[in-house]
Image (tube, rainbow, N blue to C red; front, side, top):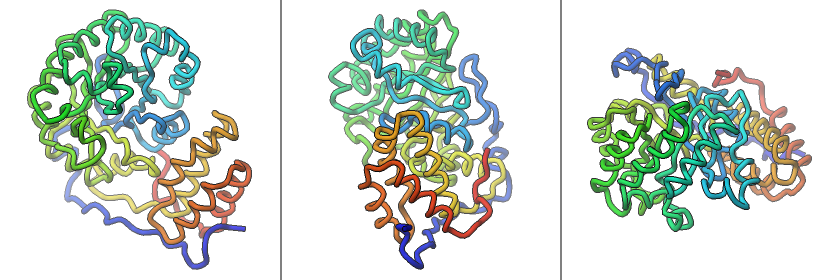
Length: 368
């Protein structure tokens, strides 16, 4: 029996971006499909941000297929690569060829260990990029002198990048992701920029919130603007991009070189294609149909189960299903039914039945 209530197939429509008279890329003066990150040439400027617990291989595959120019793994502890956490770290670093270009993100506070970890990752996994997490605001990461803790000691960011660049002999771009400040927006992030530039970093992504803000409040895009004005390396903006119009406004306001999207992609991995289309044509894409959305959710669940097994695949997918089933009549009832079942086969069957029961429509978002 379908969990969809009767007469509740109309999903909410978000306000579409305004149609523009010319291609935003033309007005911004940026070539849409040219982005160099060290020796790596990317075909696009919109990337999937690394998110612990979310950007696993199933979600990364969807993001790439729907237009993300690059994806990044969940963060991996540099120390765990040489200790008891090696098996878990290996799982986090696993990726498939369709995900390329793909980065592996490392966190840690010791330059020597980070250098050794970068060399190990390069030789054993062969990613296209190795990224450094200088932005995580979570307490257990800060206690390791990692994540946002680096903003208390910007010079150490340079030491870490230098050790990693030296260990990898320049064979893979080393990039950095950080925040606008620790407790306040001060000069620390600009000192981090200078330190990592001088040490050989290939790009810096900036989440325009402070550590103390966590994920609350409004992102301060002015910090991105000021970093871009000072930088000699590409600056990638991050924060409060939830639509194609947001992406255009961030590019226009800050002149950043690229955009990294995290929470804005949860439950809507097609956002990358919507942004690419808008920036290249100036015309918004039609909102995806409910049938399309449920079809993508079903595909991600299938992949999650294939990779992680039935039990863990379903458990890990629950948080994603919460985001897919929002914004339309009957969504709450669907979540309550699907997210409380421990039977992967039943959940797959129900999703497939719901998908099949919806009226056929041309996909609002094509496959990239």
